[in-house]
Length: 250
Image (cartoon, rainbow, N blue to C red; front, side, top):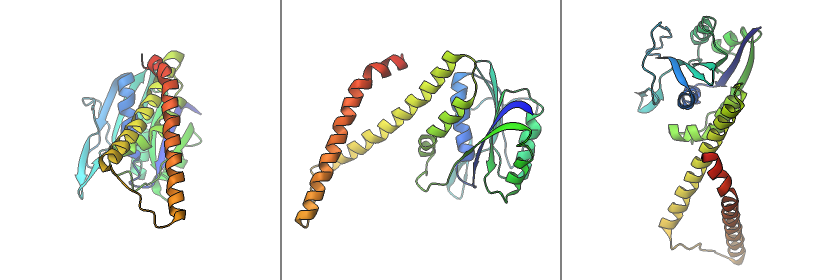
């Protein structure tokens, strides 16, 4: 069995597999050095010897008014670990290109994508390699609310955290720093969403909840109490976490 650890993001078409791979690349790029990078255009998966200039943001195009990410491949070195990423995976040609490239490069970790439908040519092709590698699969699903890349990124933070944590970085301190950074990023965006929502409530004040009867009035009152209680709990947690978060950030 090949010693390269393989991590595959699976999902149906248009579920954000390529976008998720971009987020992983962009995060790893901030933690290490990009050794090789290339964007695929026009469905061409040729991997040329020379590297393109590493991208600092998602390389995209527009189709039917929708912003889409180009497929890409990259090798990023983090704490001495060489990590390859290949984002294409919805057809047999992409899977063949991905593993054809993998056998030519010397990397510790490979992160790829594949269509999740077992009847798809891509998933059938991937099954041929499962016995050759220690492979972990991560499923993503279509969500109508994920209409922007930022929403996809926030939604996939947990997945990205799981993949990063499963990449065996030998330097324990470096690994913990990466995990901490991801979790703080997740907390930051959750709090940003909460603040934005609270500001939207503030803009609507003063407001009234018109109750049509005593039962509805009681329901609104209890709901308001629960919300206020949760806000108080959040405030207490923030006071408790403040010194710890400050320590981690420093």
